[in-house]
Length: 230
Image 1 (cartoon, rainbow, N blue to C red):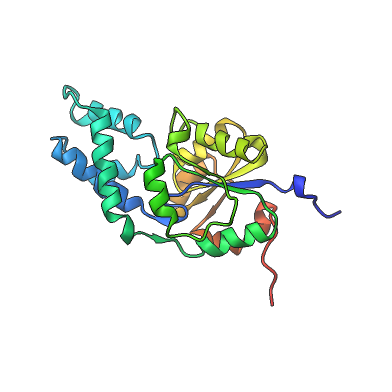
Image 2: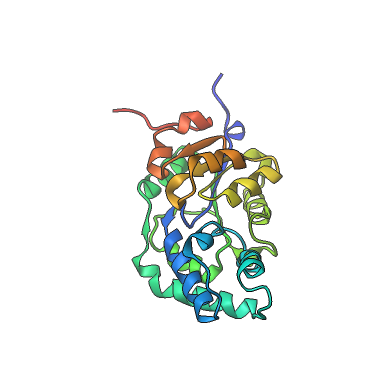
């Protein structure tokens, strides 16, 4: 029996590192911001936390690298955001992003984008993509808690009038995967953000792909309509 529309899961996409090649720009922006504040942190340590709430990962880094330093979290986030805005024009979609979104839209699969970046950043990045008309866009401005809290994914699911457990969450970081798992959603990991396959599996990803193009070639593995061969 063919699946009805309601039996096909919705797909919620993270943005940075999942649809847009932007993770390393975030690493550089955070490194420069922290360095200017007198907090010297190796870049690889920052990369391990990209995708978390800025305040959460700064708290972790301060505990290790500058435990007695007093800082203004909001000011650091503003400086990071300003640096991202400066380089946003250089960021590009990951391979297959537009094709994947368009195929799912044409196949009547419900999709939404859920990022913990703020609205200003998100608007700039979305200009790089061809987003199907009517796709809900949820940002960090829509929720109180960022990943690994599942709040932004819950909000995205609600925008589609379904429960998060009825969705597949697609993200490049372990924080995306952990956020999805907390509310019973299946998660797909992307290697395009720099996390390794084993790490994403350990966090709970049930399938892992290189990038959106790779995912598009294997949609049947997720119970989604695949591309027809010519």
